[in-house]
Image: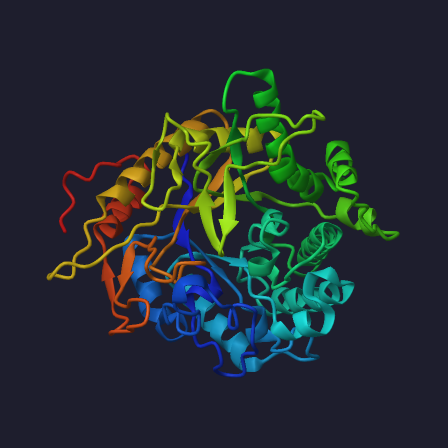
Length: 466
């Protein structure tokens, strides 16, 4: 297999902590209330104070690439301040410089579910064009400041999920269907500005969209079930990538909006802006596959995808559509390595752009033993089988820049705090008991080190010393 970049990812809101230090303004993550009395994001993994030891561990593992996100409110506390917060820039200077010194390629996501609260309070966040203007000022500042240092940029993390969970992603509560889809349009315009400005300001850097690719299977061989699964993928995945890559809304998507009595407000110049945004790659996240509802309503309109839903802020699998051919994680997420191959081949065939895999991983509740060990063989098994399918896709012609797992280190999970862990490195804290926050490599740490050293050839864990 051709050599690719190997590494992992984190996000600022889930990793950094230091929510009110060094001039940082409040973000929606800082005021977010989670269900079931889970902990907040104020301390997270304390990466703001411990990034140096973490990057040293990433270097020890052999990372050649690492994705982090930049907290907008750490740079512009109110989102649209005239000048940036110097302390915020200094922190990311230190992170980027440490990564470069460790021969780790930095990837920066510019927005990951942490809108400055001030923009939400004053303008309604992404429902307003004023937030697009503020975002452009913010990202242009980043492109200028980190010119020739950050090699890859991703404007938004999983923007295709905004209409599914706008409150978590952007802080918007109780939006109408019209407002939800208009917000999606504004995200696309902000992405286009970022793409164009990055190429203008830092021609060496590469930039491209991210998609939480939702692979849907039909529940049966019934043609209507197959059509339902295909339609769900069109609406959840392809509509966004068609817009971000080619600069147009597919007709089937416009028809879908019309069925919901939604008519996007598209201003003069919007579509030209989108057409002029030429991405260098596509980044994807992959965790699981889903089964469509598999039936049509009485009027023959496609039933909305029912394979996952949000209840009380928690993602729940719909028990009416389990997949009998796959297993599941402890959290009810399908384990489907072959779906990963299908995703990569699908993106490759449709868009013919290099792919940067930003997230792939599994969560588990974990405790160290008395020797500070975590034997996470389940994570090794999960990643091993997915890497096999990655290699198969590359062999079948997919141009892969790099493979990054989720996550490099234990983080504050989006909705379940530190009960739900994804990392190669154990962080010694529980929900409301910080303990030492000391870092301890898990068994998967040494396994992934071996995988990286062999460029994915040695996937065995038989001889790992732990």
